[in-house]
Amino acid sequence: MDFRNRHIVHLDLDTFFVSCQRLIDSSLEGKPVIVGGTSDRGVVASCSYEARYFGVHSAMPMKLALRLCPHAVLVKGDMDMYSSKSKEVSQVIAESAPVYEKASIDEFYMDISGMDRYFGCYKWTRELKQKIETETGLPISFGLSPTKTVSKIATGEAKPHGQLEIQFDGVKPFLNPLPIRKIPMVGDATCRTLSRIGIRTIKTLAGMPEEVLVRLLGKNGSTLYRKANGIDPTPVVQYNERKSISSERTFMRDSMDVVRLKALLVQMVENLCYQLRAEKKVSSTIAVKIRYANFDTHTQQMKLRYTACDHVLIRCALDLFDKLYQRRMMIRLVGVKLSGLVDGNYQISLFDDVTIINLYQAMDRVKNRFGKYAVQRASSLEALSRGYSQ
Image (cartoon, rainbow, N blue to C red):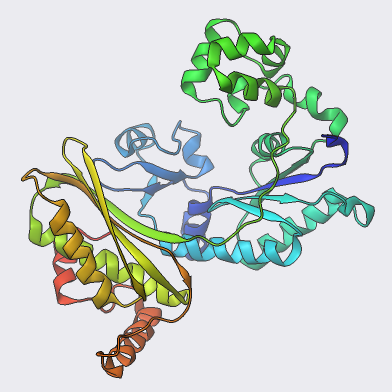
């Protein structure tokens, strides 16, 4: 493949969760902020650059993060808000980019090859970055290069709130001095393995014989060799909307209180159904997952007619839970997943009264105005009152 004519952009929202929280609370600006779980088992979902200065990073146990930065402001995450803001960014990109891939809630790739015939690719991407920041209020960085790997690394070097273009002839000079950890697929274990034989920079890695890396790392050695040499033909895959939504809860203390566990399931299904109706989608499959205290995990699913009705899916979820929970052991996690999503309005059976539809519409109007917990079934209030909410 000729990489000279490829122009791949990687866009990454800067400290996305923190930036969303700062949109609704300006007092968080300039402060060390940590977003994540507040329980003993909580982990850091995101943190500001001010918190990173003290060694805090994503996926770190919350206990350790607060020891490193005791004066940090701890904020419980709001996935509904983050999903909504991510969709805003996606919409801005979709309106402009010929092909884009949504790699995660805060990360995007674009293939703008050929656009240099009409505009400068760097100038066009910089203008898109400005448009995203103006319309959403969120800071974003980007890298532009001939490959996805180099563009992602370039974005990391440009952060925060930066932009960096690496042209074809500059790929090797850009990569060579960087530590091997900068390559996206290099984790702690791979880094230790390579460091033991003196490979610490990308230049050294790129100069190793490919067969040596294959013997050392298996088939990943070949992929790593190519990426270190700036070779990555991976295409940008056009983004398609998701086909499932899910919710799960890991408990601070393992539980076998069936009443409360079922109350939490009811609450999860209510919130997922509300999300389906808001997105004008219906589901044809529901799955329930439980994880015992010994980490044994079991899942069971059920097919049904397309629906987004709480009362239908709650009944299915509780039936599945009863089938799954056969061992009188403490439970560590429960979860619900709705899949087989398609566009459509929720349906009622021939035996249901149209009052059901009117009821859901009224409930959704209240939730839209006052939040998803404004109207709840009495059976799910147990989960809220006991601190079992999502």
